[in-house]
Amino acid sequence: MPAINFLPTPLLALLVFILYGWIEFEAFFLIGDMLGGLLTFVGIFVTAFFGLWLLRRLFAFILADLQASLLSGQAGTGALLDGVGLLAGAFLMLLPGYVTDFLGLLCFLPGIRRLVGQFLFSRFAKGRMASFMASRMQGGSARSTPDDQASQRPAARQVIEGDWQEKD
Image (tube, rainbow, N blue to C red):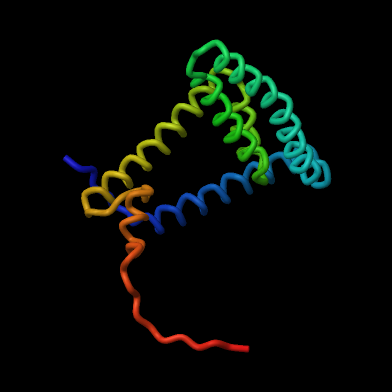
């Protein structure tokens, strides 16, 4: 039985955006009351730079792990999932706000990083598979193959009629 969507997607996106803004403003004001306005404002930039620094440092380790697993003949999916989790964490750290910074820092932890990577990878794969199947059901193809492109080109002996002008 298919799931019933009560809210249209644009309305749901708007509600999520409003909720995100409200939570971030509340956290910003709460931290601002404790630390002061200037330190709170500077903290937003410090956490963004810290997230980029962590990304650079940890991504080198993950690439080395991926390379080692590929050289040993393994698939390297663990390193790939870790990389996806790291990218999600870095993206969250770059968004302004302390709640997203906290969630981004959680994505840098090894166990949570892999779970986030698995979740995002499965969501991406499910979406790609659904669009692939939908295009196949409608008679199209998800990607054009060289044979498809060759069938769309005119044959070598086929004459294409038309008018032409030579311009100086």
